[in-house]
Length: 223
Image (tube, rainbow, N blue to C red; front, side, top):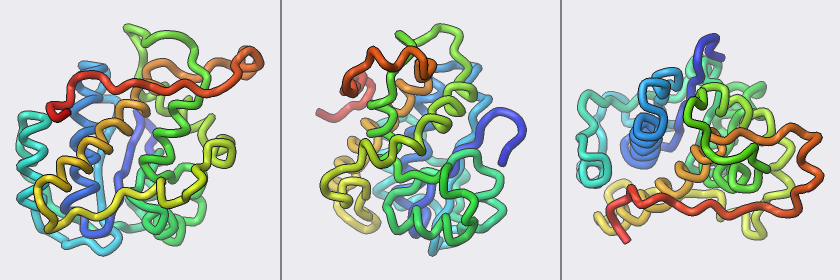
């Protein structure tokens, strides 16, 4: 695990569509929301069966350009390895199968490995300490969320476990890539809302009765 700042590793299968898309969306919104402080958070990606060395899927790259205004320059897919999991403070996967693969690589990573939809749901349910703080440290916010998240896996679990999966869109039409980007963008926003306004101390939570639904800001270009 990283010793300075906070490291997020995003994992899918080939590491050319879902995980680079989610990682780029997360990087983009971190920079927008936290400015220079966002540099304390590192975001990378890998694949359980990576197309090692390949660039981002061309359709995914098109959608990323549309959403963030920047192409995914210099990207090369890489294989998930124990060292990458060990160095990450948090691993976000696209499916439950990827989550299991990460834990197979490094069993001690179980408590810090979540699918992105799973962590977004947990983040939306965590009692907040108030509105977004202008000087919030995103690394500290990530650590606070990660400290609260494991205990909330069960209470926030969906009736249909498949809700925690983001289906593969590699070589699918652009409409499916855009739909997936919308879903990932909403999940990223929920997570960053919790990062920006960390969980209230346990002593303050007794007054909370239920989870809040977090609205997505207007940054995403598609309805």
